[in-house]
Image 1: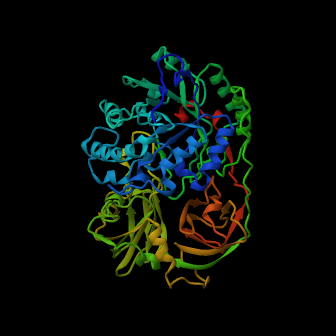
Image 2: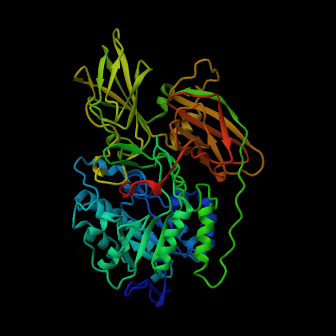
Image 3: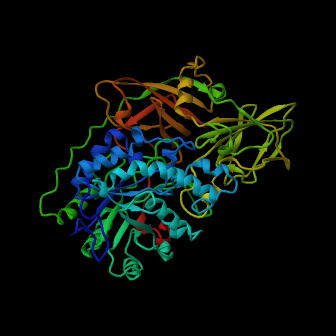
Length: 605
């Protein structure tokens, strides 16, 4: 069925179906929320007084290997958008192809980096071809959901904050054409932070702004650029993200309320980024690099109005009170909170060393020189995207091992399987002990997350990306194992008969197995690992994400729907030090906090 006119930006106020309309939006990413909880989170959004859902679309999940598409289960975008429509929410879709989002490589698939000359986010032919193939598939999924076709999508964003990248003036018109030539007729938007607004706009595409505080006359600046157009804050940052080794960011609800109130009083449309952050499950977190590489944590709580586990925070309550003033009828009731459980501690029952797990990986690759993870001939020749890669070679003497900053991002170094130290972006040299005869040198390299924002996107190949020197001579003759720890590998691992129950000398690095028995219906919980070092946690084969004792995150959110009544299998991959048990908590401990409002403005750009 076709409808009346969709969202229009022809005057100082949006209109929808010919009537004045103000967007009161919030971002929830379907790929960061267990599918079983989509409905709960969207009901809470509706009950808060929002009328529009915004979501990014992550290319790297939807096309994990070139030409292999996944829009099923957790990635069923059609079902997610249709559910929003059932709730009476409109949708603004942000399909990228680049999405930033504190997500590995800003949502771009790592297989793009197999091309040594790749120029991401430009009209470089290799990028253009890949985007065209992806958009052929993506638009076939989303087009029936457009307003014009009777669906809830009232606007589509063209790329994301390109003004801050701006490497190719032909690129944004290309993305605009990617959408329009495939039949997308809804309102198109761009979104940029303060610095990115300087970049020239496109005919017929509405500019919007991303911000957290009303400094520097940012909104007036936008109004001056687009007279007689509606104003919209596409990302009003309700909190901020965290990186390993620093404090948890908070943005107090009083400070946030003052700004949101002013935005609404001025008649401006708003989208809360994030309304509910959720979790960057598995190895999907991004990283920052403005001179120093800083990987982001697994939790994407963001100090948002709905917490990582979906709780209504004080921020939610004050926003609901504020938004309710813009409706004549009372808002829907807030769904009751979900029960959580702190399960009793579970003991580690068995362990398996990393070295004993290697025969469960794909066939190792032999190469004279080291090969970066994306160019390994695995995953149907589309390379390794995430996780760890093990590089082994033979040495006949000790001395100085020099990485020349070719380790991306962090390597544990072993001589005959004994750990002798680590190399990373800060540590480029390591003294190897003297050896007699031939010894095996092993480097276990972790991709800690590709940068998702800034000019360094093209430089995000992982693993060993160049020569490693021993006493100034480059190492040669590598055997390389892909340890991306995908479900197939974890399944083979679990069926192994080599797990050991003797704890006199648990092998590190290695896998540690425990069983959680759940009595009655499973509830959400948080895994906590005091006494452990660094690694990742898998529950019933699902990768929950990374743990690292340096914090600030000292928990992993475990959604109840990923547990079952009865026995559940927990596997911890541990690099450094293991404990003999796993603990659970009802609430997360975010550790030390820092108030984003007290940070210099430039750090949030």
